[in-house]
View 1 (spheres, rainbow, N blue to C red):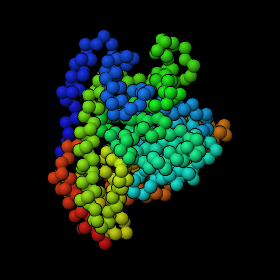
View 2 (tube, protein in one colour; view 1 turned 135 degrees about the horizontal axis):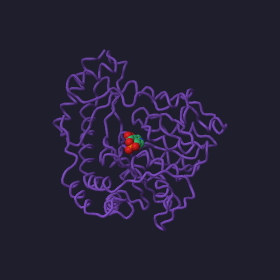
View 3 (cartoon, rainbow, N blue to C red; view 1 turned 90 degrees about the horizontal axis):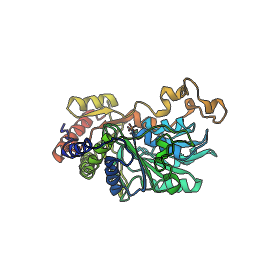
View 4 (cartoon, rainbow, N blue to C red; view 1 turned 45 degrees about the horizontal axis):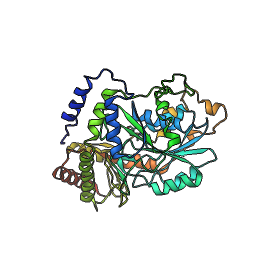
Amino acid sequence: MPRPQRWGAAELERLSAMVTQPSLFYWRGPQTTALLDEFRRRYPLNFCFPTSSGTAALHVAIAALRLKPGDEVIVPAITDMGSVIGILYQQAVPVFADLEPQTYNLDPADVCRRITAKTRALMPVHLAGNPCDMSALMAIAREHRLQVIEDCAQAWGARWRGQPVGLQGNLACFSFNDYKHVSCGDGGLVATNQLELGTGLGKWGDKFYDRETGGRDPLELAPNYRMSEPQAAVAAAQLTKLEQIVANRHRAGTRLTEQLAGAAGLRLPSVQTADTHSYWFYLLRLDRERLAVSRDEFAQALTNAGVSCTPGYIPRPVYRYPVFQQHNFFSGHWPVRELGLTQMDYRQVRCPEAEAILEDSVKLTINEAMDDAYIDEVAAVVRDVARAAAR
Ligand SMILES: Cc1ncc(COP(=O)(O)O)c(C=O)c1O
């Protein structure tokens, strides 16, 4: 498999400049300023706060909404733990909704079924870089007066109807962890255009200190999720490469779908025609009625033929993780439930489509170094394995 050289001269140049600085603290740091400039060039969002991780960015976003204990946030059943950690730490309740079978994103119809009097926010996760159905989700949000936090951690460079994802909701969150399109090892960013959310945004990730005034008498409880200058230097350099990385990944993923179209036994990811999928990975599903092998055997056959893949994505929907099944959020306790502020019982939650996706999917690696010839080789192997496994 071709592998990209992810870091080089651009990062070194920023890091060299950085070591001549008197301080590596983020506030008015030149690397942080460069990161914000690069980010805003691509995402016109006025209020931005770089964080130590994507999880931290999402926690800051949730905190900025000032939810009350027991308030509910609707999230997809397939996502990273980072989407829900901040919700739980703010004593709010993640409510899992099911997914569309071919985009693997929040199903607007199921979102509607999960809305209650306590629902305050929706968190669309643009899974693998495929934009969610934002027109339907924003319409639901308007009707029920819900805030929308877009989790763009996997969707750098993805576009919904031509616009970068992250501009439709109230708040947008990104990750710079090592596996993402652009990385600084670990890092994140939370952003908004809304004055009422934006003015305090940085405080929610900086102990609620007021850096503008130097005030250190916090009015609220907030952690330290600051990103420091070394991470910002690398992240700023990485963003200058985003367009090329996304163009290559988009071409690779789109070509793979073209090459696999019509192959019996395969269900390919679907993308709305006006959208740009940025292919953080490529998830295809197997039609088990038409294939005589198990999903794991199919993935093993691909691996044996040299194709980088894993069976499925996460092992099970997030609500099935032991921490949720045992409501083991705070040393064996879940105060909001013990206080009667929620009746949520994760042992009763079912999202059938999410469960099916995780049982019948295979995740193929996509990266920006894969050219057309390599993608065609991968497609040929997948088609051969499907043909050999046909009933
Ligand atoms: C959808 C999604 N949300 C949130 C996160 C959390 O990001 P981080 O690992 O930077 O904390 C990730 C990371 O994998 C993710 O994929």
